[in-house]
Length: 79
Image (cartoon, rainbow, N blue to C red; front, side, top):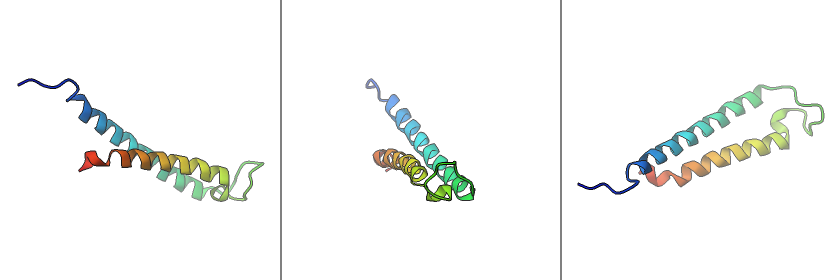
């Protein structure tokens, strides 16, 4: 039985991407809890609390967006 080139690498690549997407999602959750607990912000922040700061929200949105996009792109692999 002859194997096609790359047939073994594709599942490993998919699983690697799924693992990285899960890590990104968990990192986002950890950062969310950390930001909620913080009461101090940097000196020139727009908001009184870090969780209300648009810059912090932008960074968190990028992180969760990347994790969601990676998971959505790989959802056919999960089926």
